[in-house]
Image 1 (tube, rainbow, N blue to C red):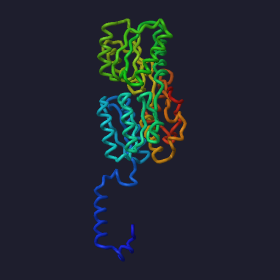
Image 2: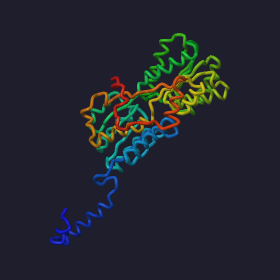
Image 3: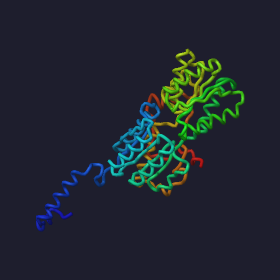
Image 4: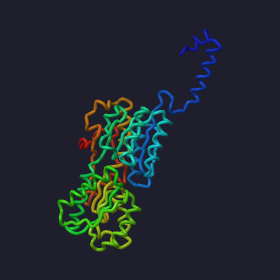
Length: 358
């Protein structure tokens, strides 16, 4: 563009009109589409009524504040079409100038989400759910990473603790998550492995409660009616369902008498571990997931690292999970419930435990 001196020497009426038109167009252009605008950070999760995802959002907001970036949360409410449509709408609104951290509602949802982001030029990190034949390397550099936590190990670990708590024999019931999701499938495999190694434990029934406490409450009431005192313990694929089961036990004055185990480390479950109503829970640290998924995507977008040059364990990896039991619950409560976790947002790979099994 000419400087002010040049303009005073040689500017035609037409040039002035063109400049004025361009200025008006620039003012009319959406703020997020202007050159040099910072990207928008976007979180896509299932529902804020789920305590696990509520903490995830808190972590995302903490990172956005630390990084000085705008943050938007999208919730699918368990509706895959809504989840995908909302992401596409944000891609259009931002002109692709965004970083997405997504927990797809269902495993097949990951592909259209990733394809839309890659087409728009946005950067995306997925967590938990994706098809086995979908890989970040197939959409370089936009599909930065996929993060999971070893569901087989978690499902097996909590089952073994439950079996030990009830004395190594007796009947249990199990509550599974949304059966088409990776986490639900893997955690059930872990339970099955633990059952195979403990023949004195009998699985009385396995019911799917779709990750929801309300569904678990209703199912548990029916299971108590059917099996009564034969139920010595309850295995839940997540803490929200375990919390619903706990309410059903409380209604029958059985809380603390029939131990429960779960996964996620939500406050209700941690409180129940403290009181002895839960035998244990396992946390993937949703606060970390919410913030670090965005941090990894944002650092890739601004060129702090090149995804195409990262090793496999940085593209598709298991994160570190933590067991919360009677032995460590008080310390965990002090550092993760009473206070917000202290996380180094620059330590992108500090909790990587290895490449995902393929």
